[in-house]
Length: 385
Ligand code: NCD
Ligand code: ZN
Image (cartoon, rainbow, N blue to C red; front, side, top):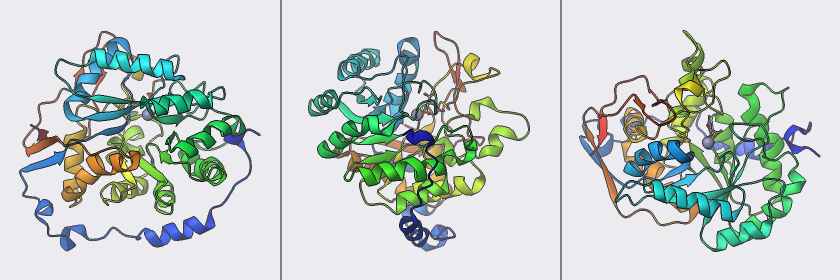
């Protein structure tokens, strides 16, 4: 059966109730309750274990060369999304892509790309297991067919990928999930919540032990679901979804640079994401989903989805966490929870943020044309030094 459009609505009543208990209805009063040094709002310097980005689009060729230095400047490692044209499907393709990334690194950079494979209905479980055993591949990415940029080769028939998922559960290789149904009858703002019920929860129940990352979550439904699960489930949260809601895209003129997938939802959802990201809870970690497209491709009658946040993610996050009185939990989100989920060591080197206006471009030039950097809509006052 076609699992992406299956009509059954599988409820998860137990987990939903547990989630409601776990999630307070209002935000705890962090400002008053937590008078740690990091939360007093007068900090001028903050040193973190060097961050990692657990969801990144680097592209290839000229675009790769232009965007990679921005990530390599602030991050030690990143999970590299495989949605190239054609996609990175086999271990051999991932090894070749890793070599192209390494070759594009600026002189002296120590950035380590963590490779992923794009799951298709033809994926060979033995190739996946070999790519994992060699240390090359750190996760497999599941795109429902048609859900987002370059996802045409994604999965429609869940049964066809079952042998691969079972092998992944055996060897402990995480599945990164783009959590949106593609059913045209489902409203785009509901596609994540419906995916959890129709696809994600059934996959997890059918594949005990499978370690799953819910990628770029955008709803309180996803936060609630994640909080109700055991430690086989993690969730990445992007920079931009902590800052924008759907008004930013649609009110006062359409703003293509804020259009990404999954699309930003209403304000209550943004607040739930902020609560999750700033909570320090181990299951939530940073995946920027920095997804560069040229302005020419963004500003079309049918423009591309994606926000380019690699250059300014750390200054934005510092400000978000500071505003929420949670600066002392920033390191958990950017540098500790991700490695713990992926069973990798925390980086031993550090980055330091200091108060001051960062020197960041509004766009970067590439041989394919300019790419606009995500504009958070407020003046930044932290910079990476
Ligand atoms: C991503 C891209 O452009 O590759 N776009 C986006 O809006 N996030 C694809 C994706 O992660 O869905
Ligand atoms: Zn992405």
